[in-house]
Length: 256
Image 1 (tube, rainbow, N blue to C red):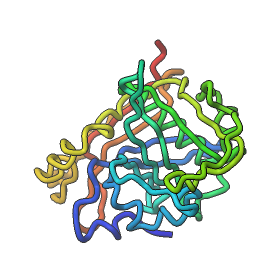
Image 2: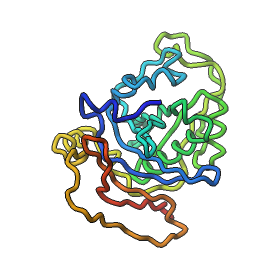
Image 3: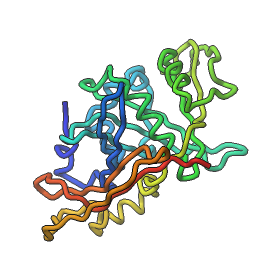
């Protein structure tokens, strides 16, 4: 089990504040925290030793964009990587290429939940989201969630390519799905261009190391409605890893 703060000592690898997302799994409330991080953490933290594609020889493209999910104790729960996926008729496509759950958090149904959250947040930012997997069982679970629809390539049998570049691809049924679920607004800053996020970090606008000096922390009370499913708040930490509230965010599913 590893903590994200352990890897923040020798450089700015965190690109955005934390956003809290409250979810329910099997009627149990769980708080997740998500933030944008540098893609270099994928190998530095050993996530590449936990994903089947990398274990089978795939080359992870460092141009991917990365998100890290942690819990309230800063323990890393999941790593998600996505990249631009443009083709004829789709100039704003996104392909989610990696979702890795840390060993201590597996078996809780988090992979599909986190995949749905990423799809919902990206959808609210105007993207068309796709997801591929060669794990037939996982592809089936994703489809059963109701938030993903199979494309024309979904469920087809594919022979393993013989060329060295694609040697990691398996023979068997492959899943290719498109996100069709609800949009979740309030998280667009997670998907800004990496140059913008790095600039904010350099100016200490996104991840501050100076704690609040005030004693009063404002709070917001909201009436629960059918459309308000996720609560969030933007946090930052000081050099002693103490968390402070920066702003409160409420995520609403887009009912349009």
